[in-house]
Length: 126
Image (cartoon, rainbow, N blue to C red; front, side):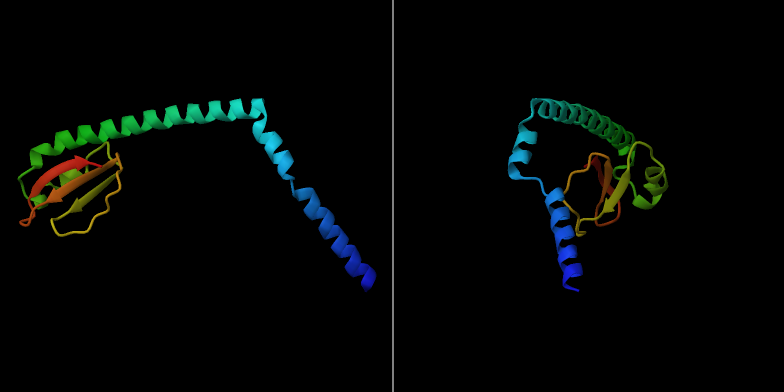
């Protein structure tokens, strides 16, 4: 029984040592010029793609908001079908003056702000 327990402990210790990378090895890998340049280039490339996509999404939403601006001052009940069928937006958020809304900015979200009488007071992205 002692031999089996000792054997299991030894196997576990060897496995842990194999998985554990020393802090010196981690520092060497982080300082490697090939890795740093490659990762930096990859991050920059992704940032450019993400930024371009965000700009395109924002432009699409703004175009939709401008096209739907004809509904400002009209009842939401009349405009709802047209607004919800609009293209170029990921989500539509409709809220009134006393509704709780988050303050996060989403360039692909169309916001329809309603007045007390349920008429559209503003259509915007964000």
